[in-house]
Image 1 (cartoon, rainbow over the protein chains, first blue to last red):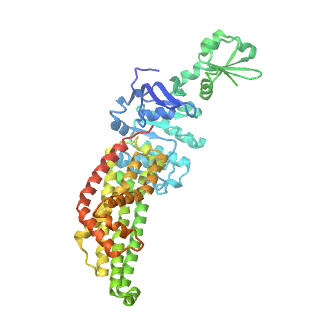
Image 2 (tube, rainbow over the protein chains, first blue to last red):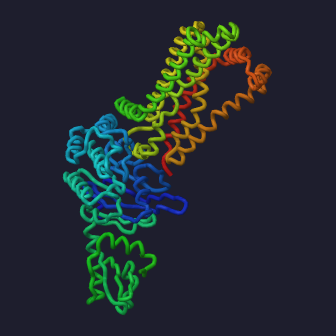
Image 3 (tube, each protein chain N blue to C red):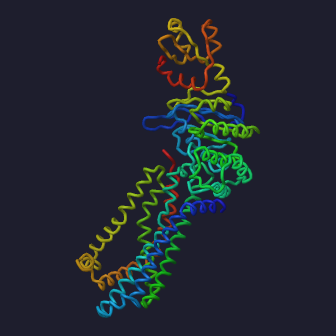
Length: 293
Length: 262
């Protein structure tokens, strides 16, 4: 990752301890003008990491900077410039879209009502209908409309597309791509729906059991990783140090490798298929077992 | 100020139903009281009084006056009790989301203070208005100084009973934690009454009245005497205690709101 660019998010050595779970030495950067996909299975530590950088939980160790500012000392200034979208709409059911505009126009200095109404029109959201009567997709669209209507430079999303149908997810992803076009905006998006991140993320960070497994540009990650398919006999000839983990079945093995170029030179003749992000995640999650079914 | 205005607007929208319901309850109770007192003066109850004699009629009228004056004041105090927004904020996760907004704990605590103080003022004005109407109907003289002290004592009692549960709600981050405030509310009123009882028991001045109010037949005159003694002793402290509790509530709320998630 290019550390010389200005970063929207800088996380260094963040540790947070709970009973039975520890977020350990989390470090990664989100370059300005990019979208980072933060991937992990349920319970991996994505939400804890996001809550840490938003100062919703106190970290035990480490340093966090958002938009170049310390996340605690400059909390109020940061929060004027960022927007957060959660997996569930945190607005009361009795409000309507017009009332939300009135509330946020008082809270945010840079609230832009014209942008907000444009999003409402684009998402076809009724202005006077109570939020409680919205569908899940409509609620998420409203939350996103509110998030994008105060000129936020950084958008932090925690599982925001979970539970939405593919049509709505696609619509929302297109909005994010537009948001990033001027290269002044950045997005950190946590999800376990890797298909979405494969479409729009510039970089990805994998987290599992409170630790970062890998972090890098998405294209580099996809290019360097692959699934080597071979017979059980050929599998026995592969050095365990050369792969992340292997999925065995009665007929052969599917082996996740992290350096496609080197492995294809070393084990020439074996087929290496392209790996998708969700496959990479699954194999990394099972890395401690090394072999699994 | 714009932020405070927005937050006040939000809280008003959420608690609109609560306030309307509270007003309706106190209004219905007050109107019921007016009708009873009017009946005592001009209606069917007045005819019944002719049969029981003047002394009994006077006792009944005075009892009704006290009930509909001071119990209504007690109900008016609902206006500054917990209006449901804190619990709703925890349920909808606005409390979590609120930490991502450029709103400080001071601004949030100030909004709570505005609602607290407004509620106290409205309760007080409502109680005074009701008291004046009740006095006009019943013909019993409205002693402003005495009634103001009584209303302040009632407000203080209610504020104290609400204090701990509202602190828990400021502190709570999950619904489970918010549930503690409900448990507190259930126990705090009888607990306060129990504390008052034991304080009276230990006091030479008030302990003789205990046998009267806990006996089989509660004597109205003795109860009135007890009330006057309490008023004489503690009435002057009520307003300063209310102001002190408002200030303490603000700072305690502020401290509780700074608590983040685990």
